[in-house]
Image (tube, rainbow, N blue to C red):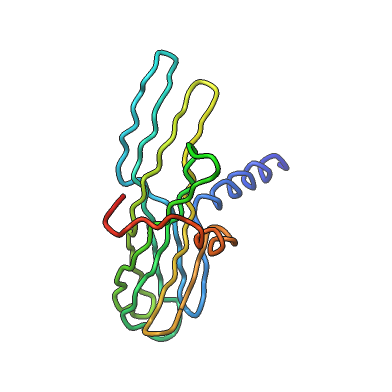
Length: 168
């Protein structure tokens, strides 16, 4: 019987790291990474594979308050650590998406951003770019909710190379 609970606990711990969820000011915000395009190529006899993907964020915003929310906007920043650079090299993709008005209990699903993630995988090693994010939800001039995958996101983003909008 004890193994059953241990097994369920391990499954829960693994699934929690797959997405982030937070509730602030009457909004429940859930963010997960989403692969938009995959162009992985097997290049060698020993199962060497080049990883080439376009990643985005899937954001779900739900109104859990007792009042409707007006239309707002989602500001996002994607920070990609490139593995093939020494010293570390970061690229910053950012933008804004519209968020429609939310009635009580209503939710909105939005796919935002696009960033290139590259790397390689062979029989014993995998090296892939790492993607962190920050999502800020605003209604008017008020910041309603904020969710980041890394506590030091702003410090790293300040020194990152900014990628112009529309380029990925």
